[in-house]
Length: 349
Image 1: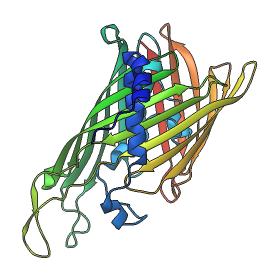
Image 2 (image 1 turned 180 degrees about the horizontal axis):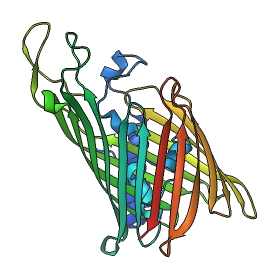
Image 3 (image 1 turned 180 degrees about the vertical axis):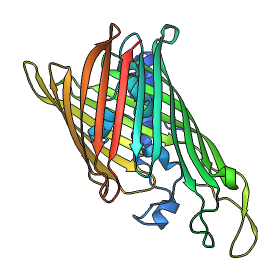
């Protein structure tokens, strides 16, 4: 049976083509948010831990975002937005930007990221090319050789991202990202490798009151991640194929506002609701004090994290080589683990 809605269709036709795309994108994100959870997740109840792969993708790579407790998708802009909310790519410096980040993770795990943005006038928007990596080495041990076998186990993750974003109005920006994910689980000693294609979609809308912004992002969605190769079961001695797992999809709803501004002083607060595919929903909060729009002090809290809840940091905007730049630092408590330190540098091209 065909059902038509002439009034709604008439209103939709009044929109320009660009605004039609914006409406459809926002509707798609809202549909995902309202769609019932898959039956597999319902069978597991509220406990969904360890039901996804590629969890490296959840680690925050920008020092400013980490200092704000991860409550960042409504504030991020420029080259760093390729890792959080692609809609923010169009909001950064007009001439493009280069962003470099390094993260000192516990257990001598190394993380880093680099991203660059450029204008594409023929498409009326901006693109970002981004690369992130994680790597560590472990000494192999067995129950018979607990002090080491002499071999080294290599583990690494690599993420390549291509983002496109544009301003559809003076307040609304929409962006999408395509990401190639690669994970090496000790293939040098017989482990597996995983390759997958994932996507992000995001929006950022300025509400027009006290610099308030509302952002919606859907990150890391795509087909299941399937490790290659096979292994011999220690129980049945059968040749078994590795099980595929869902990517760590995240739905984020973020809001930021400047509740107080006086002379050179400005305070920004942010909140973000996160719906992950493999855990319960959580709330992230952050606050940022600016002096003369050049010096910032930040703090944030992740209410779902038992070890990495509290974070803080600072930022400085300055001119480097005749161009505007920024330096950011973030500290995240580690609980029973070591604390996490992040550094980020960005400058206009």
